[in-house]
Image (cartoon, rainbow, N blue to C red; front, side, top):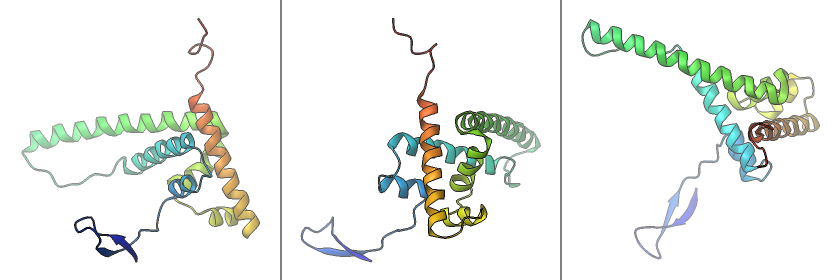
Length: 160
């Protein structure tokens, strides 16, 4: 609980609850440990992993007749295929930037929300030094991915 200024009544104070539960990207960015570019790429990766986890899941509740349901089902399949392709393309770009193992690390920490300490224990480096090493590795992988995503290559950045 914290005391804040009341926006409706000048000079008055209110009690407010503070949400201290943030995700790893928000925490890393707010403490200046990753760049804005890495944060944005991390959000893009996180959104892709969230979409991937939803692919194939849908509600059985529908309104309308059988024809409407069939059309909706076909549309849902089409959207799921499109989303799966987008996610697969993004994962390939991440793998091109940091390799398959690096992409798996990013997936665990961003997508599966595995804390640094749990990841460090998973790779046999439990403890404070292992947790610090895991966090440093995550930051490096995210920054490398952001650099790779920002690079355009010689065909797109020619000097005229």
